[in-house]
Image 1 (spheres, rainbow, N blue to C red):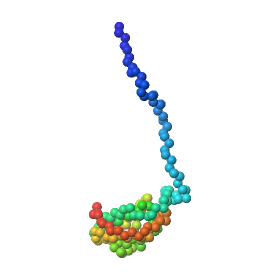
Image 2 (cartoon, rainbow, N blue to C red):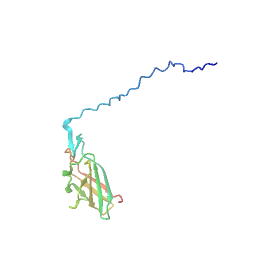
Image 3 (tube, one colour):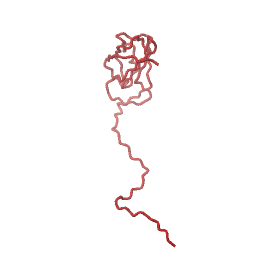
Image 4 (cartoon, rainbow, N blue to C red):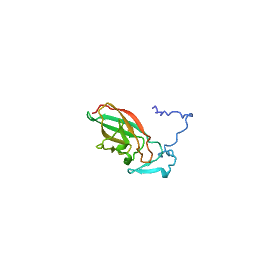
Length: 150
């Protein structure tokens, strides 16, 4: 009877044996230490004060009805809500009316309000607004275009 020969590949001399798999994860890169005196508690979250100037990132404006618009202003930092007053915002060089109420998002970097605007474009001026870390915005004046509502 013929015997069965089991063929095995010849050992290769080009690749060394691989090390056994490790179940340990590599250590993550270390971040530079943060200065504890610059960490602020804001609405239950710890934020780091980097002393950046307070700026407006984006303004969204949608038509609410034929006489009013909804304005949403997004900043690059958390806003101190107590500094955001009607005297800080001008629409076409007019102060906001008394009925305007501000609402802030959970992060604190966005404010929304409804204002009376009849035209499709208007001039918006913002001044005397502070970030939570104390930075004051430089007076900003920009032309805002109203996008169609829902």
